[in-house]
Length: 267
Picture 1 (tube, rainbow, N blue to C red):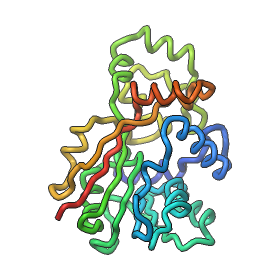
Picture 2: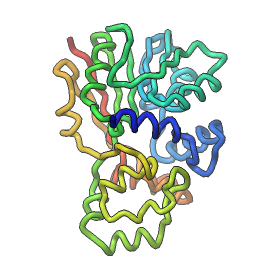
Picture 3: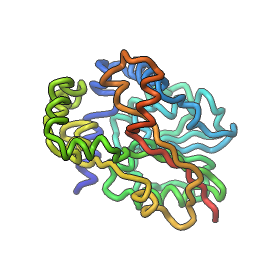
């Protein structure tokens, strides 16, 4: 039943809805890219080689599909998402391209095995009921020596302090009301960091958690090996966008919100 709730929530609350004070998807992408690049360039997460078969799991409204299509000259490009509204938006956005779009649960991919050279799943495993099954499915459709990139919310020291210090929570509640859209206007009203993380993508979001490196290591199939781990991105770009880029970059390394993994299939 939980997967039904996940599909219902994301179909009603696609990534661009209410985000960054805009309902316009193109503006959302432009503003999101500008904010992200204050901390780290998206290009570091692109495939190194061109003319490859690329699959984007939990593609949402097409942020990474747009990057892959624009910069990577893919042989084929496929996007999969559990949200039917996100897939429909992608069909409208990319109607002139050859991008294949599939409405599907990542835990039950119906795709050709050993097909893809590069698979990405950014900011989505922490919203899935069974992320281990999703990783198994990605592994099945990845070619040997192919690469998977995933990212999840990182359980940094901020959340430990949030749980332990009423004073810290009180300061945040006074300084920041919340984030616009999807019921997050009173974002810091929760006294529990686990609930805070869940609500980051919407008040009614059924699943949302933050983890550490070992949480992902414990989910990986045996023939997927970690080739690189990096810690990126701080919410200061949303909460304090006026700060200089050098401050955003420093804070993103000090209290990163995301942990990124590059995985290689060895057999």
